[in-house]
Image (tube, rainbow, N blue to C red; front, side, top):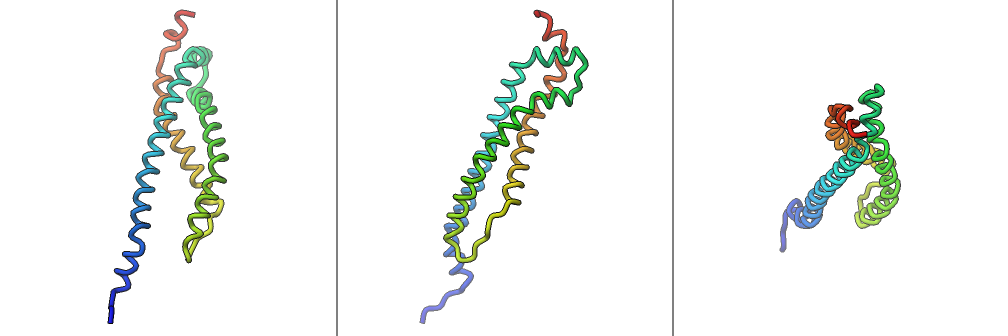
Length: 146
């Protein structure tokens, strides 16, 4: 007679799945960090290119919100396009992966909306870190040599 405990048997069966889940979380955090660094670099480059434009707008009385909107508009559009491209691919991969399980869930629109909101939030946080430095620059310094 061979005996075993069911919880140990289930733990052994799903050991690889738990390891894959931990690796997925680590790589997701690493990917988000690298993407945020890329957004920070893109924001810095955009601000550097538009320093004189921001100086002119500030000299003419533009508010901080309008300058933030000016800088973040392009990056938000890029995040939206990236989400539109990535969503069908993620749906296809996740559906094929979940197909291997007996008890499976079905992906809905809500999961993709939450992911989109998280991506926009991370992008806005990244942009809002660099933008106040630009708003504190005196417009006379940027327009001095023009």
